[in-house]
Image 1 (cartoon, each protein chain N blue to C red):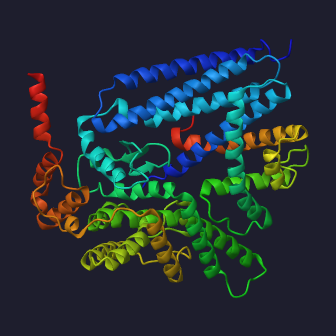
Image 2: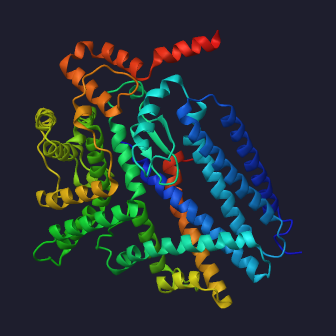
Image 3: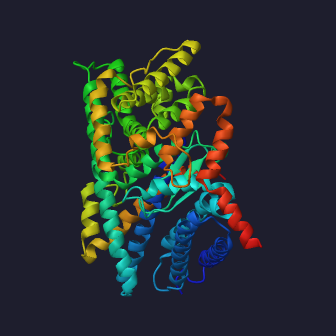
Amino acid sequence: MNSDWMAMQSFHRSQELLTAINELSIHLKLEAAGISDEQQTERAEAAKKRLVGFLQRLQPLLETAERNEREPITGADARLRQLAQRLAEARRVSSRGSSPLLRKSFAKMIELLESDKPEDRKPLLQGLKDLRRLLDQHLETDTRALVGGF
Amino acid sequence: MLWWEGSSVQEQLRTQNDDLLRKIHGIGQSIATAVIPDQLEPYREWLQGLLNSLAEQVGRNLKNLNIAVIDILPEVLDQTSVVTRELLVLNDRYLGPLLRARVTDRLPLKLLTWMHAENARTCDLPVVFADGSFGSWPLEMQPTLYLIPPVDQERLLHLPLCFHEYGHLLYACHFSEMDDVVEALQKSIARIMEPLARRNDNQGRSDQRKRKLIAERWYDWTQEFFCDAVGLVMAGPAFAYSFSFYFRTVGQDMYQKSFIDQMRSDHPLTWLRVRLLAERARKSGWTAVADEIEQDWQNIAELLGLTEDYFGCFDEKFLPALSQTIEDMLIEANPRQATSSEIEFDGPINDSVTPPALLNSAWRRLHADSNNYASWEGRALSDWLSLKRALATAWQVNE
């Protein structure tokens, strides 16, 4: 039987998350420049909720991956497990920059998403940028599985 | 002037998004004029809605490219990629079934539409199918794309396998609760595999890594066992026969696989699936069905010189927790259960006969008289799809 469903669900999840990252990121930059856009703000709020929900789901998987690489990551499909492992690896090797996604406690990234403080805007943008890069790389496998390589 | 204003990349992105918009409009025109069966109308509406939302996204990209005071080109580039990928997948998988719809699509579409209509969580999700090995693309909020091999689209005997695919959709509709139940099983399996004393040497570390891989793989495998159970609950013995018949001569990897090959597979070993299917059939009172499929697999395994060996990926000790987990998942998903009158159905076929009745009737006919099965199937399909009436109506319209 065909196993594409797993790649398709992962593809859809990553596409949604990337859209959320971009909507929020654009909103934060507009806000910093003093440009208000009501519809963009609404989309950014929805994006924040989507991202917080996802990071809360990812957090225990990442903690397991970082605690002991021989411990099984449970309650998640193969693609989500791979994403958690990829993030754990990125956090292990990251030695520069101030991204909250890669350098600080993972919970800090969730805190930043829930914060409205202007001083949190810059680190949040950095974290979103790293998350986008991670998801873009992760998505390549699913896209290839669904529509083939080029 | 800021660096990105009037830059070549800004112009490239504008051209790219203009092109996306042209593609979206082109696809919209194609699907609007496609001649399709009635059952695909909800799917066409969904596609049109999706195209509208993609066009809105492209519109936002073009608007954002005109914002001069801040640099949002990375975000616009990424959103352009998001839309590009959506269109790639749309073109590759989702458009063909609608643009290439045929009269013979009516059989799978009637079955799939019925399946979705029987459950409150899926009744509003449109169905569609494409050519391919049995499979599905199940998402809670989107139409389900089923994959059905062309040869099986116009015949009855292997359509019961669609009920397994529907199980994946039920999982997706209840995924949070399902994931919790499956996680508990994984932890239970990990505990069962844990040795009384751990060795602190290379062998000990290798064994631990194997146990981790097995426990993780059971996430995917449990969903497959659940989907098999859904198939049996909804379609009855027809599912067990179809499953067994479809896979038993595919090759020896249906019966045995190395540890590494099992770990690479999203599906548990097929022989084990048959065994669990037989156990569930026995619990449902279909002892003869269970004995028959188990014996069929045993016969071929003996011919291949293979014995049951899962290389540690499955242990009899997993069974109580696994069975309980599948029961809990079935309670959560609540698939429609085939009735005894559907399972024993042997009456005349007409368009109101339910799919489980039709499919069980087909398997009974095959067992009773395989020589004349093909002619029976032809008549049954014609009656179930009301083909004569449909043709007569078409003639009247033409006249």
